[in-house]
Length: 145
Image (cartoon, rainbow, N blue to C red):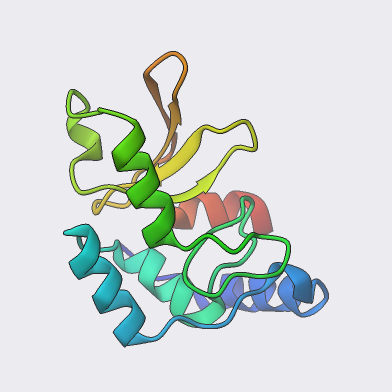
């Protein structure tokens, strides 16, 4: 996985500086490690890079972390993932092994990232899984380019 390039980082930062209510506080290594331990997973390196820079912020979708922008919502990635795992039985989707919830679509459908970095939409009423983006970089490039 390639890191977010500097030009894209600058575009995101510029956007968030003019929309402060969409920008969270940067995540700490301690917050990340505790969440990974609690959720028994490893966060994707692109997600870690993003949340260390911008916290829970807008990136085409509201990406949740630990301290989110005011318009993103208060729920942390840990809370969203725990709630998802308690509500839905998705063991038949191997892509979701060790996955974590980073957002939702506004209709109650979780947006999920797996450790490989793939981003999925879980259609909870249909019990269907849809690949949205192969990586966070793809989402960011589509949004900010």
